[in-house]
Image (cartoon, rainbow, N blue to C red; front, top):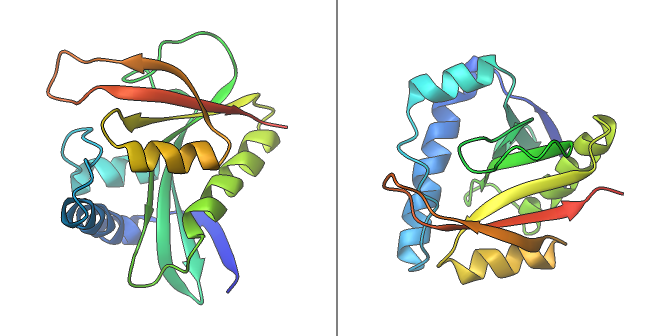
Amino acid sequence: MAVTVERAVLDQAEDIVQMHWDAEDWLAEQQIDPPCRGDVSLADVREQIEAGEWRVARSGGIVAGALRVLRADPDIWVDDEIPATYVARVMTDRRHASPGLGAQLLRWVDEHARSEAVSVVRLECVETNSRLRTYYEEQGFFLVGRRDFEVEWPSVVLLEKAVR
């Protein structure tokens, strides 16, 4: 089924938050360490939507996935002046997503980065989540570093891929 990615609107904020909570529940059921970037609040998601950071994926008119795309992610990445697109979250709604939707969303990020004349796409993954790290590596990302935090976030591995 065809998937379209479009900028999220405020009316979709609750759906995005619920999708995040559902994804956390699914990860817990699978005994996979979830990303831990603090609580996702409705107010934060609304603010991020207004800033143009959220995109939703529609399949058959239904929101089946969402992703947060940034021009910088200073909470995770050190500014190195390399033009990059940062993926802060990628989520699929397991009730509506077709197999391969995550990969389609990451390909959309590649196209978006190219349109912004960016040379790399970056994301992070909880260090202990080997399944997700392997998945990202299968999507063309490679390890470029690791980050520990003084707050209650788990250590993450830093992954990137060149935009061609």
